[in-house]
Image (cartoon, rainbow, N blue to C red; front, side, top):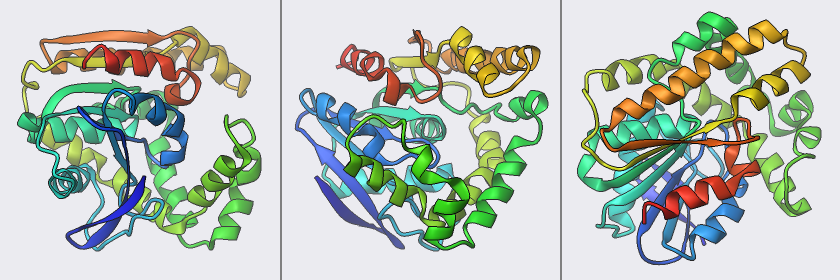
Amino acid sequence: MYQTVHIETHIIEVFTKGTGQPIVLLPGLGSSIEEWRDMIDQLSQHGKVITFHRAGLGGSELGVKTRNAKETANDLLILLKKLEVSAPIILVGHSYGGFCAQYFSFTHPSSVKSLVLIESSSMEFELLDEVIGPQTKQSISMYKALSTFDSQSIKNQLNLQVMTENIRGSDEKKRNIVEFKSNPKMYEAMANELENMSNDAHFLKEYDRLSPIPLLIIGRDPNYSVEIMMKQGMPKEKAESIEEVWQRLIKDQLTLSSNSRYTMAAGAYHNVHETHPSTIINGILSLL
């Protein structure tokens, strides 16, 4: 069920389904709740699934505050109170959502029963720029430019109709995702989030490690990932260099807790939740 919840200076769009153990999903940068709906339907048979669009995304207002991991963590804390969720949550974060999940877990440890990081952005994310190039700065510039376009111009610029052709699901789901990704406010929010990642990461590094909560790290298949990058036109040597750094950053997250384990999603690239949802579902169920 979709609903809106007032969080201090803005309204956020929330989706909840099921009852019992609260399972909170934090989607990645520019990721719609619709991309997680099939997985939510299955998980809701085992607990109360809660997910929301970060400020500026979907039906969530941008608000007046700087958008960063700190504010997302604060929004989640207030949201849990508004939804009267008192039990510690199973917190699941993908990509940038995983970065925000780390922030929340460090700053509100008593609220987290266990943590699942799926292809999560790392505190050392800037090491990727050393092998890829200035991708973070380039993304920020692109998002800032897109934030000045209207919705139709964004659709045309990004060729969103073609981009969503390979998404699994109904035509309605694809249309919803196209509308989601053509929102100028989303690109303003994402540019802001990326600009603040260095400060967020510096703050997180002040912590030693999480309390010994169960931590599950889910990573992509390195061989398949190199294959995908090569199909996109990248030289094999560079693809392997990028993947070596990515795998190291993912597995380094095992040190965040003394009670951690790693699962590789065989045959998966970055969007594990779309192509290999069973890997995530089984991992979450093992924590219930």
